[in-house]
Image (cartoon, rainbow, N blue to C red; front, side, top):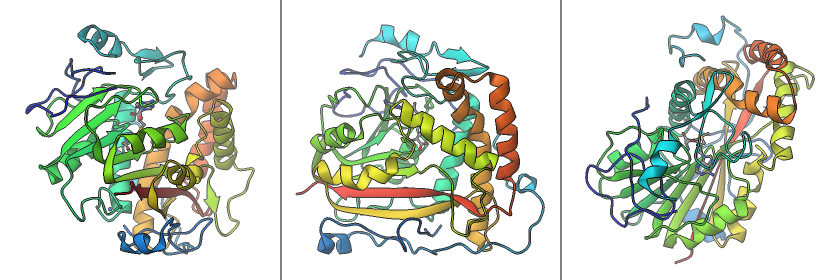
Length: 393
Ligand SMILES: C[S@@+](CC[C@H](N)C(=O)[O-])C[C@H]1O[C@@H](n2cnc3c(N)ncnc32)[C@H](O)[C@@H]1O
């Protein structure tokens, strides 16, 4: 995998890449806020730190709210919201043609680049429905982080020369970052060419596989990876390659959702469809080597790769608008839309191909899951963990 040392102005939106130059413009795609909370396994937001002093110097973790209090007013369903709905709920030019030849199954399309057999590489679709959802999820993430694109103290001391958005999806984070930091060259890498064509001059997108050897010509000051759980099989190698391709003093930040659903007050029955689905999804992802509980291991893996000042910040995405607190109620509305829209995308490929279910069997389970997602008596949430660290100077 590689990229040109300096992005050209009016850069092409995407290129098939390992070890090479951008080749082909990507098709336009539909692109795109607070206080952290919670505490799941770990009370109050925090911080595991290799070096306490350095951690203290790092950006303060957002304030957590601990256990979320449920709203005693249980009103209409979240999808009545005025917020609206998220829609339906190596290297040469010749490569360009096949990376657009997406695989199709059950009415959804999947990436073609390095698609070595159905679910064996990334198993979520790359169609408009999924891309709209990714952009909706970005909005939810911005709400979660009080409108900050990242949490670590990356731009605190000096401007960033180069930033990598690893698994950039629709490129929405890369584009927002590039707009905020015109002095920085932003490189977005993804298996799918789903980024827009018209982008800020300081952004370039490449189609490539982050699990292959990284051959970037220049290193990075900041490497960002969001919602890559279920995508990367070998996280220790990911962190090790990130370490090798980072300038001394550079930062890495990885953000992910953790399955299965959590609940602090016992109101979520283990045998409800939502939790049965989420546990089975986790088990199936573990079976194929891409456990969607990977965030649990990031702190340790980042530290073992050589990063220091490793810090973890925890947030909660309520399953719907059940919390009393206004911000979490709003996050719950967005989170409900996000997961409802993600449900089929997350399930279809894995349950049919790995578990051998029929599409009808999947849809029956998902109907029950959708119903549970709306149930405000279930005070459930998904933990969202942000883990960041720094390469020693
Ligand atoms: C859930 S999406 C997250 C996208 C983006 N980071 C965001 O937060 O909106 C995961 C993305 O990772 C990409 N991906 C999965 N495996 C990959 C790999 N091995 N190399 C590069 N990209 C990959 C997928 O194509 C998809 O766009």
